[in-house]
Image (cartoon, rainbow, N blue to C red; front, side, top):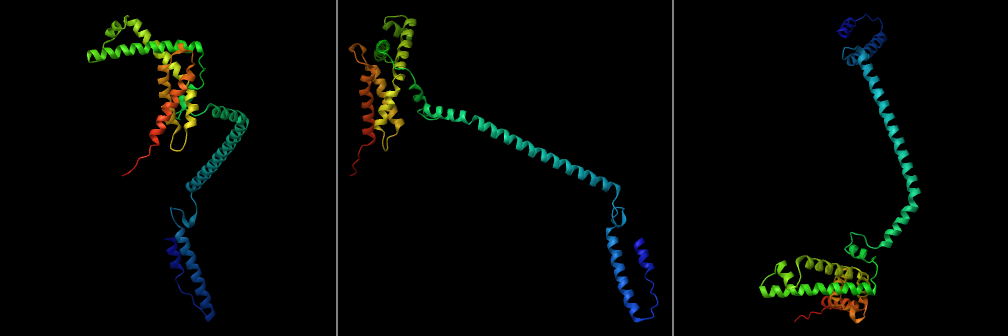
Length: 266
């Protein structure tokens, strides 16, 4: 309303005596009208001509304080990151000899546990058997084979698997003794086989070639090793490694011949 009143006051036309005074007056009126219209546009929120209110000043102060707080928080985060990076670099530099040593140990241990050969590779670290131990283990294996043969005969005679008391009676012993003999025989067989895994791996590397996976060769060699442990007779004076060598190679040769057969097409 104040702006309209000012415009109405200035709307009365003055009296001009010369032509130049009219042009100057029109120029001044145009300039004054533009200034009034710009001030009217700035008149908002109860504060005329763009004069800021107390609430606006408080909002600006609060925003400035928030900006300062955000900047300070970011600066502290950057400093913390730099500190952590420096500490991490120092830790890596200090522990680099240990990491190198541990990596060498891991490489020297052989394949990892994720590798199918990992479990077999662990068995290669076991001690070799002495001649006396081979005799004891061979006797336990032969006793196990005799008990299994008795079970097979009973199954064939009865037309089905015999009960444990029937098996013990046929073996001429009681159930507890039969169970102990079976456990001892299984233990002897496992120890005889696991103590000679390195022999299987060394022979498998000789047969390794295009189209022949090392893992497949080792599997076949383990079957030959188990067969050799069942056939081994320590009373003849041979060492088990010498005797089982032939069985391992025989199993691998059979596998190689089966995988490299030539099929003739008609």
